Length: 149
Image 1: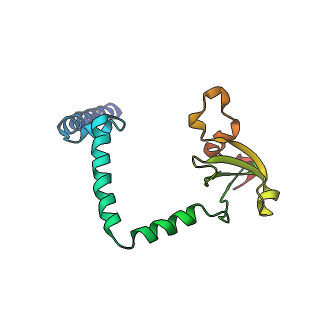
Image 2 (image 1 turned 45 degrees about the horizontal axis):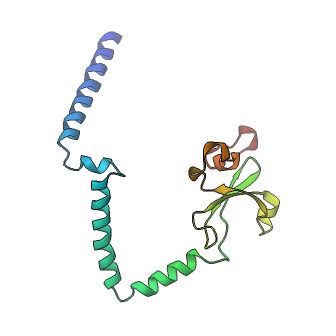
Image 3 (image 1 turned 180 degrees about the horizontal axis):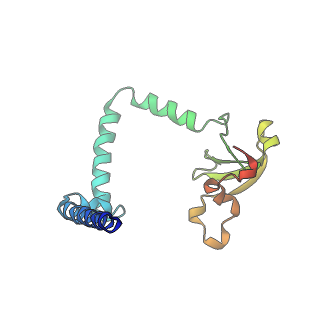
């Protein structure tokens, strides 16, 4: 009985994989999977240009743009953070840190409204592995069971 069920499972998964290959090879947009390829980037840029032209034609566009930019660059934004292992981590972007920085602070300084802590780094993807800090990996860390949830 188990062998029959196992065989049926193998046949079903094999048929599904074959069907998926057939669908994929017939997909007229498969070239978009190469997200950094020239053809895909040309397509994205042309669609972005059309969308931007429509948005900028709206008389409210410039005011909405200015308002959104002012909010994004405001110095009084709340530094939203995540508590991991007794420290507060947050990703911060502003006019001085356009690409963003990862920061780590003690819970006390964060709760006090002045997140004085260690600047982890700029976007760690841009740094060679030897220059990356442990702080940059915190965004993927899990809370230890002893810390509670």
